[in-house]
Amino acid sequence: MQLKSAPYGVCPLTWLSCPPSYLSLLDKIQHRAQRLIRLKAPPDQPSPTMQPLQQRRDVAGLCVIYKTHKQGAPHLTALRQPWAQPHGHTTRAATSRVHQLVVPFARTETFLRSFLPRYTRMWNHLVMQTQLHYTTSLHTFKSAANAWIKQP
Image (cartoon, rainbow, N blue to C red; front, side, top):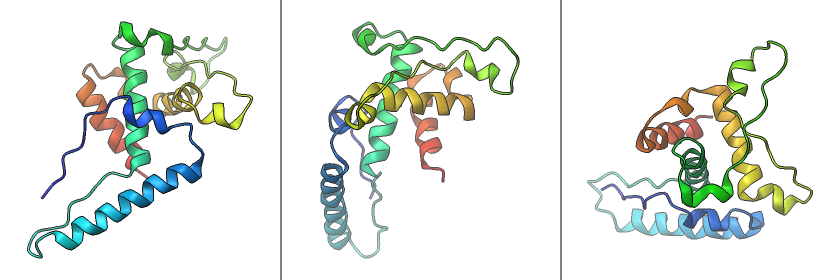
């Protein structure tokens, strides 16, 4: 029995800048639901796995950045960040710098947790560590981003 996940949209991103205490309450609800599902599942079937909510938020945020910058979604132009300027000298990270974004300055912790600073930083890490930003389909990007976030 496999639980289908909802399509990645903007819905999980609405909880993004909440205090960690609020997010932990949502995690507790998910753990309780998992426990109930495990108790009600037939003993001969493996228990279903659910993604952690933070992982779902992270993949959804990266997908929005991908749609904004790589697919040019016109309805997301307000979220578009400028591309980072390349270094004047050659470094190991110079090749990935072309695909990085400028991280907006965050004065408060709440704004630091909000969409633009958080996912711009995450996008820059993704660009430095992988080649996912070269993918041509959103589905491929989602699957690979999910695997990238899962790794320790």
